[in-house]
Amino acid sequence: MTDIIKENKPLLNSEPIDEMVLPKLIKRITDPVIINAVVNEYIENKSSIVSISEKYKVATSSVTRWVKESGNTLRDSRVYRVGFDIDSVNNAVNEYLNGKESLDTVAGKTGISNLRYWVIKLGYKPRKIHDARYSQARVDECCALYIQGSTNKELYKKYNVSKRTILDWLVKSNIKPKRFSETIGVTPEMKKQAREMYAKEKLNCTEISKILNVSARSVLDWVKDIKRTQSELAIIKIIKNGGTLNSYGKKGKVKTKYGEIYYDSWYERDRLIQLDSNEEITSIQRCKDRIKYQDQNGIEKSYIPDFFIEYKDGTKIVEEVKPFPLLEKFNNPVKFKCANEFYKDKNIIFKTISEVTIYGNEKGHPKYKKNGKQIR
Image 1 (spheres, rainbow, N blue to C red):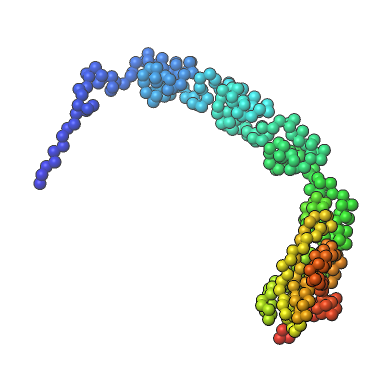
Image 2: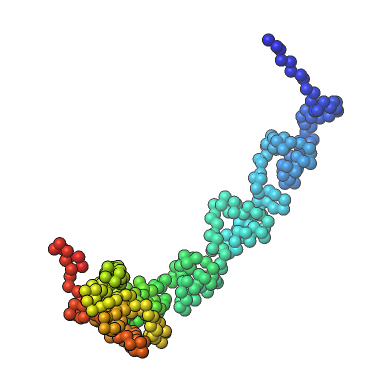
C-alpha cells in the first residue's frame, strides 16, 4: 500500500513573514488609553462604529465590545448619522404629523431619509398617498365642480385620479353622490317621450337611447311595463335587419325545377313553392338589380328586390315579398316608387307580394304541422 505524502505548502505564497508584522497581526489591544479614546469618540462625538474603526485601525467588533464593557448602550444605527440626532428625528416626525406635506417632502427638508420608519416606530400611521398628493383646496375645487353639474367621469379625467378617489372626496365632504340619471339631466318629460317612441313609433331601446343621449338600459327601465306582441317584435326585427324577413324563420334554400333558390323568410319560401308549381313560368331567380333611393333623413341608400320571374308569353316580373303591415310604413313606399320607375323603361313589371297574395288573408301563414305536431 502506497503512502500518500502531503507536502507542507509555505504561507503567503512562499514569501517570508516579516518578524515585525507578525506580532501586529496577532496582538490584542489592551491599552486603556486607546480604549477610552474609542469610547469617548463614540459617546461624545457621536461618531459611528465604522468611522471609529477606520480611524483607530481596530475591528468594529472591538469598538462594540468596548462600548458595552464601559457600561454604555449602543445607539440605533438608523438614527445617528452625520448631521442629525434623535431630536432631529422627533422634530421631523412632528413636522410631518402636524403639517400636510408628504413623507418625501419632509424627509428631503430634514435629511432623514428613513422618516417613514420612525413615524411607524413612534406609533403613528403615515397618511395615504393620495391624501398627501392633493391639498384640501383641490378637493374643495373638485367638490364644487361636482355640485355645479360636472360628472364623475369628467372630474377623474381632469384631476387624473380614479373614480373611487372622486367618490371618497365627495363622501368626506358630506356630498351625496348623484345617480347617473341625475347627472345627465333626465326629466319626467324625457321618460314620457321615450315611452311614446317605444309604444307608438315602435323604436327599440337602442335607437331611443341615441336620440335622447341616454343609456339603452335606462330606456329599458322606463318602458319595461309596455308589452309588445310577438308579431310586433317580429315586424320591428324585420325592419332593423334591412327589410329581410328572417324573423319569420331561418334562412335557407328551396329546390325548384330552376335550381336551388335562397330565401330569407318563411314568406319567401312559400312564395317560391307557389311559383315553382306555376306551369306558365319559365325562369325564377334571385333579383340582382340594386335600386337606389333616399330615406326619410335624405340619406342615399339602396336595396335589392327578391325575385326575378319570366313567363312563357315574355312577361317579366320582379317581386318584393313584404309583410302586409309594412307595405305603407317607414321607407317602403319610397323604395317601391323608385323600383317602379327603375323597371318602367325596361318593360319589367314590379309587384309587392304579401301574405294576402300568398295565403289569401292578412293573418299570415297557417301553422304548419308535421306528424300531428306544430312546427311553427
